[in-house]
Length: 116
Image (cartoon, rainbow, N blue to C red; front, side):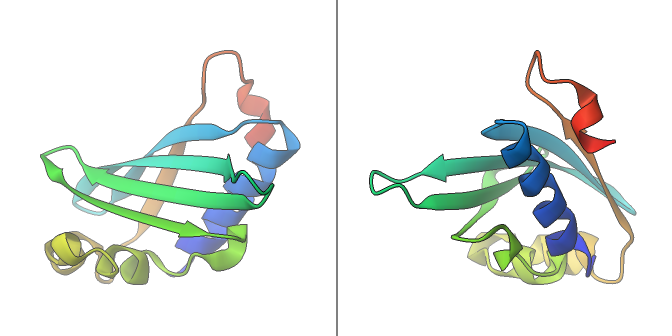
């Protein structure tokens, strides 16, 4: 889970290179699956913001959302999840010392080759 921020950086860079502003993904953890939404938003002043939202499909009232001005602003999955006050149980139950995989789900019309 320490490479979570590194993986997000790669996804955001490839999204930028291919003019993709949003993307969904599935985050596989050893014993659970979470939904992820990645967005690149531009402020009215032209500043790019990188947004990551993670949801538990079994508990839709709990979500973790974080925003940074650089794609490299995100750290480990453990630190990201722990930043959400309602999601501490995720960190305790699913994330600690777990292997993760992120499966991108691209918008219609965007070739999967952008991640090759």
